[in-house]
Image (cartoon, rainbow, N blue to C red; front, side, top):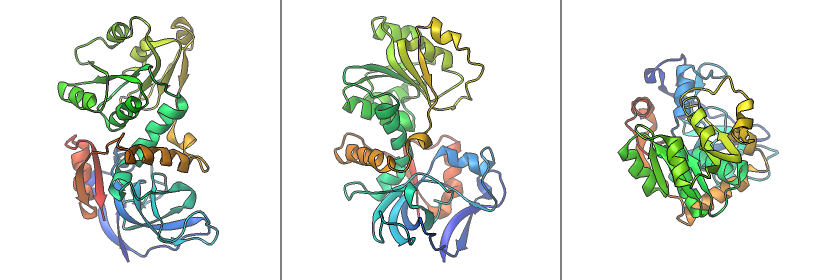
Length: 324
């Protein structure tokens, strides 16, 4: 038997229960991983509450973890029992001692990266990889704008962009967050609670604006972001923290200087054949010390409800993990 967190109805953290389950045997193209560390992400609360529907109830929770392969399906060739691995894709059920999932969603983990680091960084780190290295291939010397620079993705982006030789102008909502983003490598900070972001970007770029703007906030920052993109530049709208962008008038792109806009998702980039290479680049940045993974909260698996309460109450900082 193995322990796992599941929920039989949607609701608050109190619906999460620790249960015993019989570990399933992997299908032909699946592997079973014994988790050593499990990632905690805000999207997990969406599945728990019902904002994002689970495929069926009762359901497991979580998609991100790291551990060791303990069983492989008959047709799996790239992985074998004993391999150190990590994953950040479905199906739901990573909040568990063991998890069965498609081998295509699993990457090999080098010895230089710990299970805890991998569990804390896979989802956010792969997001930063595709944003800075694929959606727009960031070059040394470029000045970019990154909203919510003190968030989980933002702090990793500041570090990675600085390692590439780029200058990050980060937006934040408080002096404390400004300090965090600067410590992570941001070149300049704009506190949008009392500064005009578009005006400040003009000043910092000598009127040139930015070749690329990364916006994971969505609705509240959409118009500001458009004002900060240089002619023929790219606005990368990759998240909806303040709500989805809607009612877009394409004519605005013309009037602002023939701008490009994209709405990417990790799932489109982290496809079989590309996932391991993306992860390898992320792990290499960690191994070289160019990216630091700040794990500030560790909870036992049985304390998943407490973890969700603290996450939703904004009592956590940096990354959080569950330990089975």
